[in-house]
Amino acid sequence: MTSVLVNVSGGSDAAKEPWIWRLCKEFNVKVNLVRANVDTDFGFMQIEISGAVEDIQRSIAWLMTTGLNVESQERAVGA
Picture 1 (tube, rainbow, N blue to C red):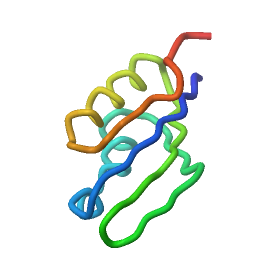
Picture 2 (cartoon, rainbow, N blue to C red):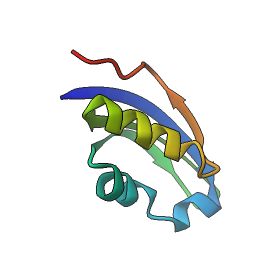
Picture 3 (spheres, helix red, strand yellow):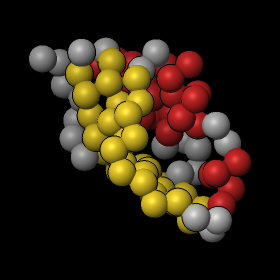
């Protein structure tokens, strides 16, 4: 199993969507919340996404389509 740290931030609209749930459900990855600072108009989270390399890559690609600011701290490479 591979793990990747990802920084995710967004405005108040992002808080209304269950995007962490969708990552787990639709892409078969585990999400661990490492660090977060969220209020009513802006939020920042550092999450660790774990799973198969292909699933991690697909989940990050999907996150980038949501309007969230997504910055991967490292590339998902096989062990």
